[in-house]
Length: 235
Image 1 (cartoon, rainbow, N blue to C red):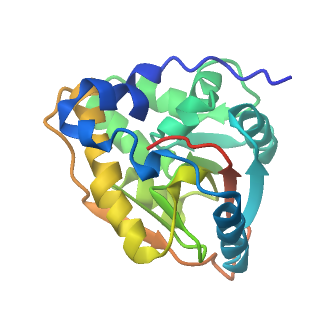
Image 2: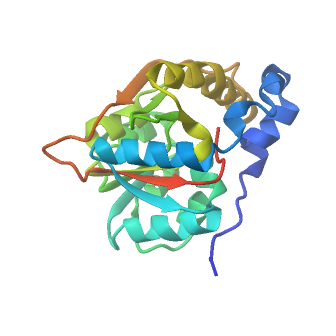
């Protein structure tokens, strides 16, 4: 039986905000909110593996929570990019409690001076032993695409962190790179803007940085792992 904590961030996930933010109401029940077929899931898994990414499959949120814990060794420094997927599997609430890791996220958030906090994100946040994140899209060929506003997410994934664990639901599986960009711009950015309006009271956000991971680094092939979940999770 899973010990997955309750997600206390449900009021800001996709299913909540699509009901309360009129600017993304058109996304409700869209194709990208649903899991793909078993056939497409297996094709994407094989595609990721062909590009050198190690893939662990999870059946659902409970399974994903338990398996993610096994991918991070005791004592490792850990940070996360904001991810509703990680929230939905309970991992953010888990990190808010006692864990066997050196939780850098907690240290960053404990700094209330925003300039100093930004420096901690740069110096510590992107150079941890394990950087946890999700993606906007995973192609059937095994590429992964994502982006952000500030660079703290793409920086950690591209090079900064010693290891990266990508946690992603099957609703993010798309045909190819062109559709990955389409999903990012037409689905993820509008959701991120709704999140910004709800949490930060900002008018929205922009995609300042866009990154495609086409293959694992041949000189460090085990650096990026993917926890691929059969459920639809995140945005």
